[in-house]
Image (cartoon, rainbow, N blue to C red; front, side):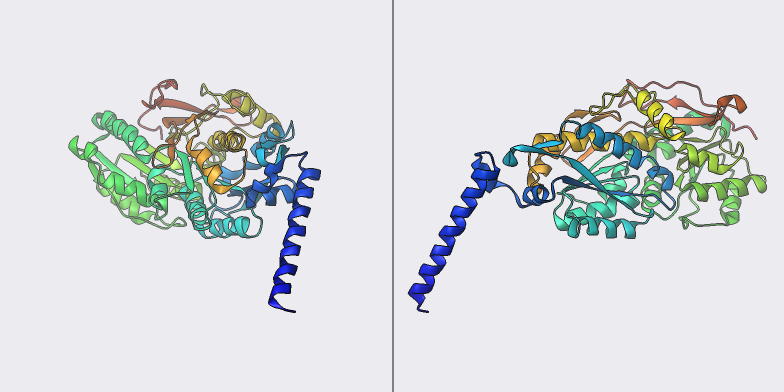
Length: 442
C-alpha cells in the first residue's frame, strides 16, 4: 500500500472514530458535549459506576483502638452522602455514588505505605483518607505525593506530619504538638510548688515520641521557670522492662511525667512502677489512655487520675455538616449501635467524611488537580472543629487536658469519665469542667 493510500485510510478511520465518539456523546450524554472533556479519573469512575475513596485504617496492632470506629462512621457517612444518588459530576451531568476501599494498616508504617500504593495503582482510588498518628498518615501522605493523588490526613500531630513534607498533594487536620506542650508546660509550672521542679520524659522511638521529646528537651518555658527535664532517652515500642528508666526517675526525684506511647507499652511501665514502689504525683500520657479501651486495657483502676489530651469529646459544641448530628448525638448513636463508648477517633473519622463530601461536592470532577484545589479552598464547620487549611496545608484542631476518673460500679458498662481541667485557648467555646487532682491517689 502506498504512503498516500495509507494516509487516506488512516484519515478515514480517524473520521469514523470521531463520528462514533460524537454519536456516543449524543446518545449517552443527553445532548451534553462536555463528556469529551472529562478527566481520566472521572472517566474511570464513570466506567465503574462510582467514586472510590481509599481508607487505610489501623484495624489491628498497637493502634487498633483508634480504628475500631472507622467502618461504622464510614457506613453512616456514605448513607448520608448517597441518599440522593451521590456526588454530582458536572462533565457527566449526573451523580455518582461514593464507595470506600478500607484496608488494614496493621498499625505499621510499612504496611500503611503498601496498602496506600495498592489503593492507588490497583484500585484507582480518587482520594485517600488516612487517620490516627504519623505512623499511619505520614507514609500514606508520602505515597500520595509520589503518585500525585490527594490525601486527607486526620489526627497526625502537625510537627511530626510536617517532618515528611513539604507537601503538595497531602493535607492534615490535627493539633500541633506545640499546643499540647504549651498546656502541659502550664500544668507543670502550676504543679511544681506541690510536686517539685523535675519533669521526666517517657517517649519511645516512634515519630510521635521523637518529635515530642525533641520539643520537650528544648523547652525554654520550663527551664526558664526553673524546672529540670530528665530524659532517659528513646526506647522501643515493645519494651517490656522499664527498671532502668524507673530507677533514673527515682534517682532524680521525678514527680511529674509526660509521654506519648501505645497502651500496652504504658501499661507495662505503669504496672512496673507501682511494683517497684514508684508513685509519681502526676502523669500525662498521650495515645495510651486517649481511648476508653486503652483505659480498660490497663486493668482495674490503674488509669484513675492519669491525665491525657482530649482531642474530641461528645460534649463539644459542634455538629456534623453531613448528618446534622451534634457531637453528643454522634457519640450516642455509636454507643447504641456498637455498645461501645465513643472515642476521640469517632470525631476525626466523621470530620474526614464531612470534608470528603464537601470537597467533592464543590469540585464536581475527579481530576486530582481539581480535587486538590477544592481541598485548599475548604472552609467547613465539622463535628470536630472548623476546618480551613493554611499555607502549609494543615488545619488546627482542639486539644484539652483531662484526667480519667473512676465512677465505680454505678458508672455503667464503662465506669470511667473524662474530666477536662485545662481548656484550649485557641477554642474558647470548649470550657474546662473540673479541677486537677494531684497527687494521684495510690
